[in-house]
Length: 321
Image (cartoon, rainbow, N blue to C red):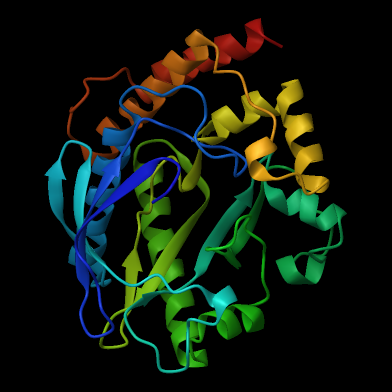
């Protein structure tokens, strides 16, 4: 279960056998690890489901990447194979464990758009220029010659970045499996980057998740290549969930939230946000639906074009400086 996606378990997984589940993509959204925000974005759930299903099919067909996708089970529902969720902080993952979620998020970065966490981590000394493979401090818009791979936790209350040695330790994967995981992530990134370019978008960054099957085989899970998992740009302007992040960063709520996190306030007592402005919410809704139509080549929503939606977003930004 997540803030914006429900999981209906139809068959429980075991160590020897995968289970079966249904993802139900809702119109809810979440930013800054807050959880479910106070309003919804029309069409968002179905758009994410359709884009993710398309990507799974293409990755399996064109590249032979093993995934947990089974079939589309309705407009906003996807049937998937499911694995066990073992908590590394409780020492539930042992050497030789099978059929479990690898408790990592693998992030690929092709560029550093404004808002990338990399800038904050560089400033805090949590990342070095050597880590990034650059000789000088990057600025927003910096493009990497080859995607920079990052890794963070998956099952902790607030995600934290890890070294690759720490990632292997908490997930109990081998060096060979780590190499395979990195190669798969880079191949997925290349596919998404090319697909985005074909519809006029730049693929800045994104994330993927993996599991080990009962046969100890690496398997792509969850979803990838959507406006929630990835950041896309149109003429340098965000076309992703980052639009909502940017709006909330401009509100007093964001500073209050960061202060609550810094002071270790219980999540239940974090400050509550206001809904998105109605005009911006409509723009974001059309953004999700329009990108989905273009990405899949199916006019499911008959939504405005990406160019039209981004024109409206530009006008909104100008009006609300």
